[in-house]
Image 1 (cartoon, rainbow, N blue to C red):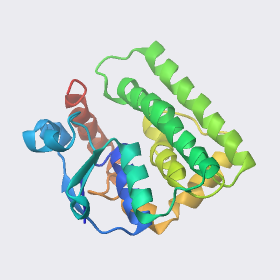
Image 2: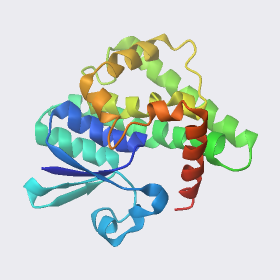
Image 3: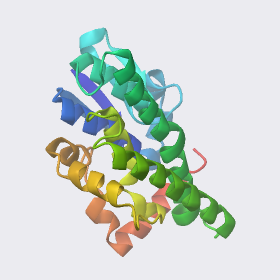
Length: 227
């Protein structure tokens, strides 16, 4: 049994969507970030960095795994799916996974901070991160014009990037003219495992479309900027 410690964020969804797509049995433990659960001794014993997601595999001597990309690799290897075993195929997947880990995630995360959460409007910072996100979207779009999936076949690389790119509106980033990216997003949106995965530990998409709920979400998010 996989025990998932998570919260409703793109990084959290990377883990839950992977679990759903692989059909692995798992339980869910909500980590309330706004209340500081990530700093508890219990959670720090699982992830010394105090960030979600993290997993504990009770079927493997209670092995704890943190960092969303590492979790995805571990789960894919455990199930024997969504990550090729040959050198070329594995490398293709991991490089696009790292593209998300080192580019899409951090840049969209910073766009969110300055566009949505930071109490002051610092336009140069907003512009810098939104423009970089757009550039990265264009990299994805070019790749998806060459291949149906990022690493030739559907893999954890697609799941990782999708969990972030799908939230482009929250980051204030345009998708205009990126037809290949649009096609890819639409196809992934219809996958049952992904649809279920983004509702773990609870659904927030409709919540964020409501102005009052979105404002409350932003207020709670601001509490975590320095934690």
